[in-house]
Length: 126
Image 1: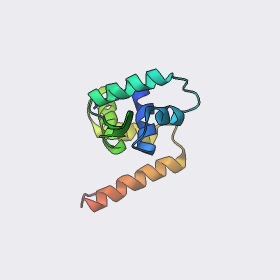
Image 2 (image 1 turned 120 degrees about the horizontal axis):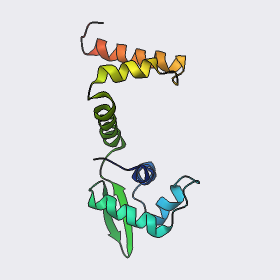
Image 3 (image 1 turned 90 degrees about the horizontal axis):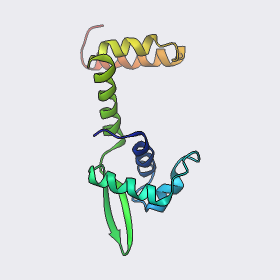
């Protein structure tokens, strides 16, 4: 499921603590986001329609909780970038990440270490 940038903000607020009322979500949004309560409520209802969020009622109060995990959402987002920017190929993406000048030397080493560890656990050759 593809999430828009505003939907990521809502989902992050829900992943941090749920179930949550719409007002709780508004309070958890970054300070740079100045959405009205009605905007957040509309977005939550759209996420319910997309089946990314579940809604239950406690009296007159709607409670929202994520139906997809942060990991699932990240996997989908990564697959979209992979397909759009690297024609679905992991190799060129990994090469890009390792060679990217925005990564610090420490981050590059950590990425290489993770890849090396994964290769060993799957019995692959270097």
